[in-house]
Image (cartoon, rainbow, N blue to C red; front, side, top):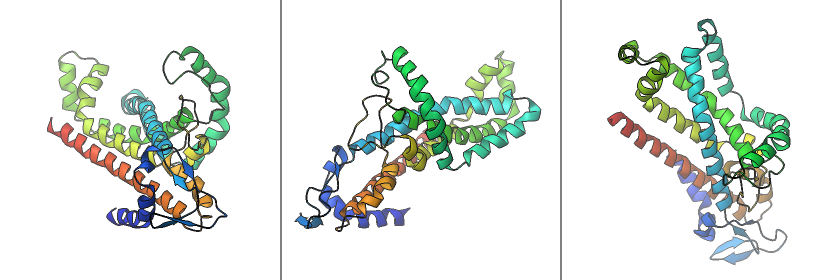
Length: 298
């Protein structure tokens, strides 16, 4: 991890010096005039008119990941409860196997399914209905677009991380001491009350840990998001249906164009994006440790 951080820092350093802090709060990604002679700016060789800002990528990455977590967390908890206690006993093993199998499906498969099935369904039927009935809620009204966008990316990400949350939590529910459940039943609680008020609070460390792992995967997901997000450039989303780009998918989509820059500044700017994504992921892990320590101390 330290070696990766050092490599990205050293390689992206010329871009860090050229871009400055405005790299974080401007919506401008312009490679400059590719067929002009490079110029010197602040001691760095760049193409004329080259300008780089990635606020639209930071917003797209965080919004799509947080929306995916908001969708996936209740579904993951419900799925884990069903697999552990609600499903017929003879089917629990089979259903759990398929959920674990779903967690290992390559992301490009989810992306292709989203492109072929989800986008036409959402754009023709679901999004117009949502805009009509939920339009009074900020961010859910306005033009519904072509189906590529923020909410579609969040839905695909949610489908990808639900198995991760559900499989981890199911194992923890099964391993919960019987005495803990019996204590709940002894005071007259129902099965649902025992789960929500006794079992689930005792598993908060597992829930926090699995949620942070899922968030980390959502933040770094590339191919599936690339295929359904709309790949917006220099554009902040107006509503939940707007096209977006995320940091990881943008690096992949722009690498070929960036390699045309004879000064290599565009590639180094992509490396700077990767560096920022690495810092965000490390921040998520640190937050998880803080939450786990807090949960364990109660």
